[in-house]
Amino acid sequence: MTQKEYIFSNAGLIKSVERSAEHPYAVKEVDTIDVGKPTLVLFGGEYTYVPQSANHYIKQMKSVLEISDINIADIDIYSVYYEFGSRHADVERTELFRAAGRKIKEQGHKNAIQFRHEKSQLMKQNEPTPKYIEKLYLSIIQPLIVSSDGVLLDKKTITDNLKKLRMYGYSHGAAAIYMLGQYAQNELKRLGFKAAEIHQMLQNVIVIQFGPVSPLEHPAFKTLSFMSGADTRVDGFNKFSEYMYDNAENLYPAYFNQLGTHLFIAGKLSERFDSEHNDDGLLNERNLTEDGKLIFNAERYAINNAVRSAIESSTPDIKTLVSGPGVDFDEMKSNGEIFYDRMVSRLRAQKQNLKSDYQK
Image (cartoon, rainbow, N blue to C red; front, side, top):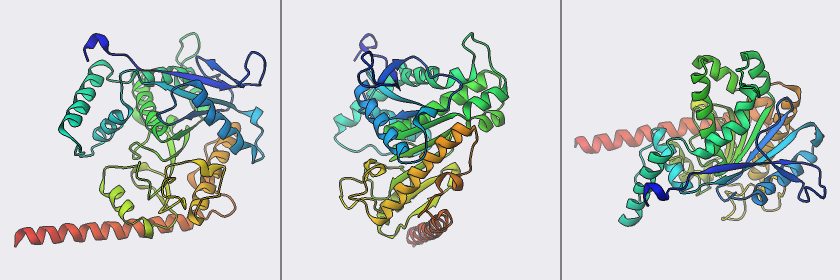
């Protein structure tokens, strides 16, 4: 592929509206979110190529919110779709993990490895920052930071605006949100804000994500991740992820908060082996394990409480966000601490054994 043939990426944004003759599917394409109203933006998986696919997430999320006492009219709901152009989403995610310090060994036929390497280089040359991430920044974040006539808002106004923004990400959607956060950090720095100010402001944006295929540590936004330890599509490319998958049968519903993550996880969420990566459990508990019901309950509470807090312009702590009947945050935190300490102890023992064998 030559430079001339490269197709730049892009993204689109749709908004939930009243069904009408003009909007028969109850959505319309928009350029930016509306400022001043509580807002929920949905980021689907990598196959969310068209508005119809993005609308699936709007329907799903409206159903989730409707089973609570939240008035849908109190919040604007948007959904994103991606136009990857010449980008490959899986190559993009691999490079995200590399940039986060992971050592990734490429597997497969040498021709496939070479293709991925060449694709990665071409993407970096043409889009050091993916154009679709820049577009999403202009659509979602910039209106909250810069006025419509191009004037930088003051820190308090920006903070108040960000308190009204909530996002949900599924699978690749988590990677898109992760990149969006990095780009927002860089833009705020360029606009003259200090690192501590940027962190303080962006942590008012609450993100709920399921099956995240992205680095989890040090997110720009306050991010709660929900997943299954048996999910083969989610690989953190580190010892933690590897150990968690290998010991999923011993992983009770747990909460981990190392390195800025807020991860809620259980060893197995579904009775079906092929459904661990699906977020259908938000609305349908039929095939869920008891642990799966608990994790999805916690996620639903997090979504509902995040939306309520957007309406109230507040930023709750993690325990408050996941709290609700049947979810014991303190027990999940304790389970996570026990599992993590056991993992660290065993990995240290393995390392010491390997060192002793080498010395012999």
